Image (cartoon, rainbow, N blue to C red; front, side, top):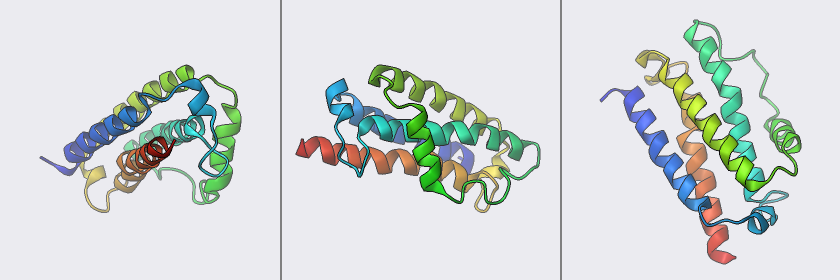
Length: 150
């Protein structure tokens, strides 16, 4: 199995972990703030925001261009705040639908790239891992820990 197939499979597995972590979270729980100024809703909005940003980045990679102009995402905190502010007050059910739709778009955009883009040092590899499987696992773990304490 090539790196691309392995990474796509890893993303599916990690996304399943995230879905499982939020499966029993209700609207009230999703509104509880426990990670700085965020709760589950904001974490999911944040994930969706980064996935949405990477879809056109993957398209640019596919055209042989840079994923995005240098410096675009240097201020991660500002981007995270923007994502969350744009979706403030959205109900958890809608956030979950957006997450699923954006995830499918993210995977489809990545899958359209050649396998070479996912090889070590490939143009898409770090973006995909950081926005996909690593990101899902990071936040799924945080949500599981929170849920165990709550």
